Image 1: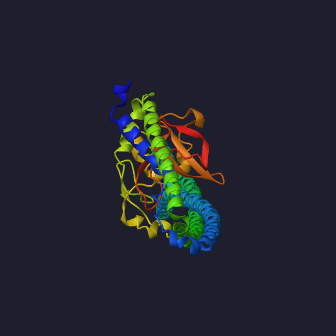
Image 2 (image 1 turned 30 degrees about the vertical axis):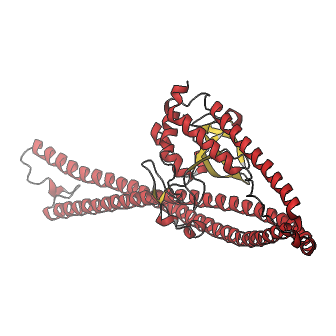
Image 3 (image 1 turned 180 degrees about the vertical axis):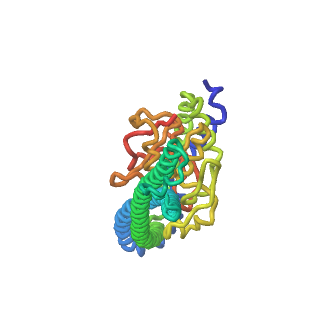
Length: 427
């Protein structure tokens, strides 16, 4: 079984260690070594700054929580815009086909009308010619000059046949004109409906873009506020560290150093345990068949830039403009993937074609409980019931994803906040 894991198990174990180490709270560097002369003057100042740091820490935690909520809202609205873009293209295609059908029906109706006119002119010519020759149907002059009774009957049959065929042809053409006119009317009605649907899709795209812009502005405002709080907190932490250094003295400094050393040792032990656990986990079942091919194909894109709207079955593509966050990161000028684009590329290895919208991808296969997820399943995240992100499960609690603008395709531990309670199994 270990031989089957190959590069996948080795790289996954290493990445698991790295992600575990980076997501944990890192132990800070050793504190400075203050002098005894600063203790008395700095005690009150240190107490005041400690209180301020605590206050800013609480405020920053609230601000960052709000920022994450707004980011999820932006992602949801971006996916709404993505859906509207797909629906608009579909409506435009339907409208184009309806327009072509209506034009064809109109030409057929015009042709039928022209044929009616030609047949009517021929019938009029026949009637006029008969009249001039004195052979109008029902006139005795049509039969004068007959040389025998047989000739008389032949003339009568000829006149009846000619006039009857002309009238029958005219009647058939009139029926054809009615049929073509009905087809033309239905085609125009279909074109009107398709045009209305296209207009509705265009309005939905406009509404989605406007909602995205509002959400993006709210996120930018909150990000600016969080940045200000972070800067203030960092400044007060620096001042507190300086004040504590002045107050602590050498003896207290030694105690703080010992505390830091113990924390560092605990961190090192945790990292070692995580590495061992990751190696043990890597010995579990490996993905096989199509799932292995899909995972392998996705892994070849590690480090490729995130580009909103980017990616297809052949690889990364240039992103598109969204009028907001993605534009500020220059996604439209980057060649890369967004979350659903990466899935399209990966599953192409198994001959599976997916739509470029995570909401539709969630219904593209069989849903299984999240606890039964297997390598090669797709995982989804939602806000307010709307799916806004997708990733590919690798096994061992790891996934590969194209996370957000400004990032790259990466492997990360599965995030359970906001995850939907099922995985979608296409293979």
